[in-house]
Image (cartoon, rainbow, N blue to C red; front, side, top):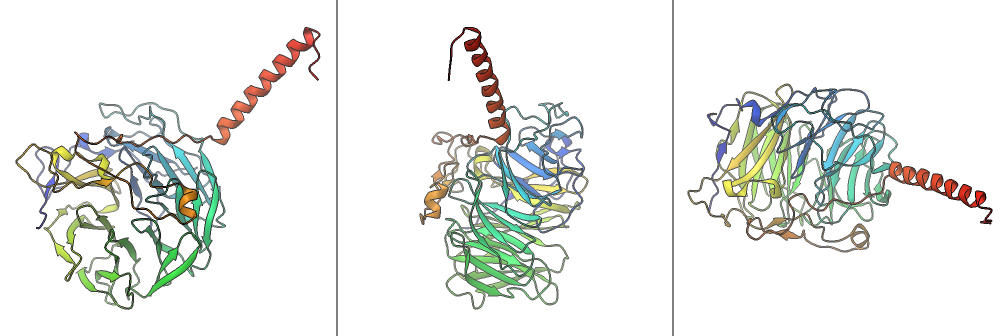
Length: 452
């Protein structure tokens, strides 16, 4: 059976028009001018983040339920790096926690407070203090950190790429490296985990896709020149099918998608040419429904395909979403954050250069008001399958799943908030303890009591 979409724009907007009402969008921020291979926007089920222009690597973290106008100098921001922020990623098991990568060579882990409101319920900027104290600082890369990606099943495991040509895997709770691969050869274009987190794939400017053992920091397989063109190559594992997707360009600069069998990487199973536009295509794959969304940086089209684990592998669903406003970056909101009773099967956050962030909602039309279990199978939950130590020791587990049926789902949409002790918090507690000790010692001395 095929899945067909209609595209949902708020009130009175035509299918192919961009003119989303301002009350549904996020506007007012001046974006960072740095360019690279990052997505420029990432989202959890509760928040999304974009890098802003300014000193100290400011980051705007917005709430999905608080669209409106951000105001620099008024709305709360996250700020703590000594250089510009290049990439970030949200913890899949805590929607309030995210990691940021910077030109200052560090990675910082942040936790958004529960009362975080850059804009109020009326869409107006709300006065708030900046978040400046990170939970953890990860130090180990020798040059700027360019890409980040959290592990899909193990708690507090993070992969990172740097312009020092290394790929590191971190235990963020301990603040330590688990492994490091230092022979990338050139700048990384992409970094992705497989569905269980047993393998890590990277694409690189040297035109080699490397499949790695992330526990050992070693290469287990390669694809040499998956695409002949010079554009960045983007990657995606196709769920648990054993298939692997690369997106790049041909020798004639035509954008193309290839599907590979992980058991035989000598040649692709299929190659589909998309068009001859110049922007890099970003693949967003929904493994629950088998739908692949392709969105190009610099163009306004989101193309949906259905992936089927047999020839010809990819089926174009419809024309998708088209607009005249080019996308600077795109990301998907986790299934836990969707309006399933409105049959919203995907939401893509589209970042534009000067028109803000637009939430693009993909809807499967249904007449019934009941929960549609055929288009909403169980999805990944906010519960990790194992700890970082268990995973590093060799544990291999599939993601813990949950029902999206409102009557059955037990897990909190945001996931449990992790309790990390920050350096700032510990320092404050130590200062208070030392003052208390000095006070008690004085009391004992005044009373003539020896405490030696």
